[in-house]
Image 1 (cartoon, helix red, strand yellow):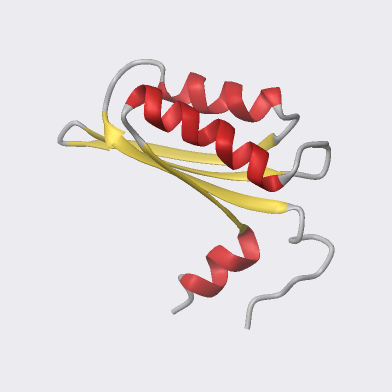
Image 2 (cartoon, rainbow, N blue to C red; image 1 turned 30 degrees about the horizontal axis):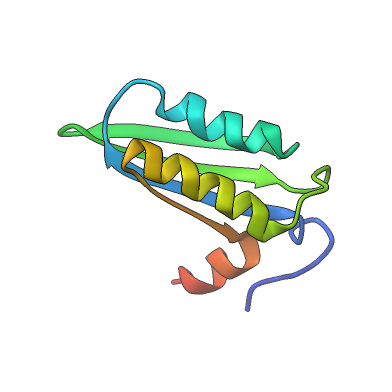
Length: 98
């Protein structure tokens, strides 16, 4: 079962998917920075013109509610025609455990 100890309850996973274009990393990173969310780890790749990115982010210093950060990411997704999903890390781990 997924752990919910102090070290993981402030972490979230942000996944991004869409057609590759310049500025995706910058736009997602800016939305997170505006909310004082720190990017802990990032992985991105482009396969046949499809951009994929996964970020582990730390929510400890944000004063914004989780849903407000999701709304900011949804605006970026709409503006750039992307799919962006942010989930608390324990939920992500629970959903994708093997």
